Amino acid sequence: MINVGIAGIGFMGMIHYLAYRKLAGAQVAAISTRNEQRLAGDWTDIKGNFGPQGEVMDLAGVARYSQLDDMIADPDIQLIDICLPPHLHAAATIKALEAGKHVLCEKPIALQAVDAERMVETARRCDRQLTIGHVLPFFPEFDFVCSAVQRGDYGRLLGGRFHRLISDPLWLDDFYDPQGAGGPMFDLHVHDAHFIRLLFGVPESVHTVGRMRGEVAEYFTSQFRFSDPEVVVSAESGTNRQQGRAFTHGFEIHLERATLLHDFAVIGDQPKLLMPVTVLTDSGDVIEPEIAAQDPVDSFVGELDEVTRCIQEGRESQILSGELARDALLMCHKQNESLLAGTSASFS
Picture (spheres, rainbow, N blue to C red):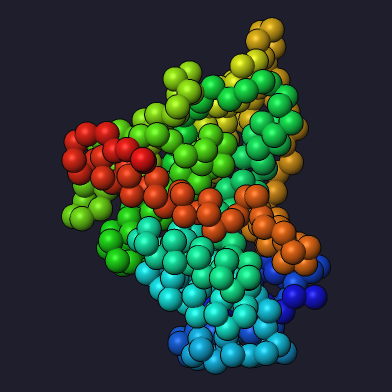
């Protein structure tokens, strides 16, 4: 059994706490927060754009620390789960790794590429596991894509189109702060950047157009260029200024012998499956594979199961590694660079 200490009890810290309760291989043994109300177990003020509302939690048997350093020093904790604001990720991760702890850090790995590289190098130097909470591949629709590509069901990848948009998250004061959440590029699109990196590798260049809100990109589209000229990948992300559509995401993925489709949205506070996962085959068939519906929290259970299994088995995750997350962050920075310069940005 792996004893986990969660650093930061906000929305994501709460989601991780709930997910660990469904996991056989790990348990929350400690939490760390400077919020006295939440430290006492009253999480009723926590909310997000999915999952349950916060409630009063029974924290009997859970060590509670107002200072992260004290939790890191707890000899009974093997894994520090960092759910702090992104600008605190690097310092907290490095401190925990150097103290001999394994680390799961929420996405994005950091806000600056140099910090991401420091985190990866520290994990390597300290011989500790560093995993980053890119949960998207554990959602059933995206897991279907990963499995089909890995098995080679429909031949090689030829590209795809990805989109992920939300309405303004009015409950987040620092969403458009480049030193806070980092804006849609780093808080939202980084999911698809990671998924594109996972499927296609690192691009050669990217060209991004969009509009800014202050110092961050508000809405943008990106065209990625790969060494194989037949591989065509694009992505759309950002925020819309009206509140009627809280969220939407989806994909159209091209392979040699099939196209994979999916589109989901929350409109007027109602979930709408606009396009179930659909396979268009080269023989003209239209197939809707059975995709099990699940609570979004269960995707985090899958993510945390991968993390704990990697620790138990002494192997690096092929999905959640620090290196993959570092590359996804770099992709976001290159898109920003292209948007601001009005020209393509190279990864070389």
